Length: 88
Image (cartoon, rainbow, N blue to C red; front, side):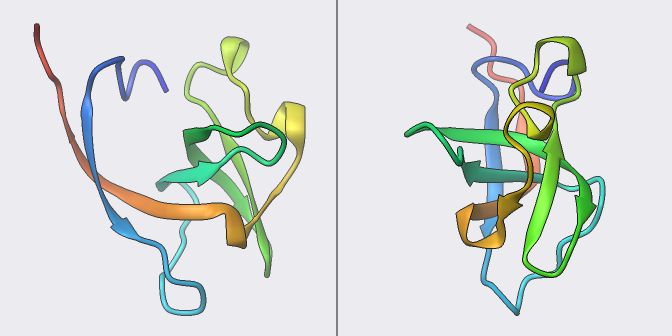
């Protein structure tokens, strides 16, 4: 998600609740990768009734909907509300 989020940033999010949380294009979400056992953080690019397409801000190097397609709303964990840059 460079340049918006950097490695070691701390993110705050609100839990996604299906049919209660409002998703908007441009929001950053945390979700389970549809093919791997990992969590990702990406920006919503488009929304349909039961799925979203997500894209990284660094498109050239991003593992996103260009590679794995749309993700089910069931895979969404939360909506990022803010972040803090953690400096070591």
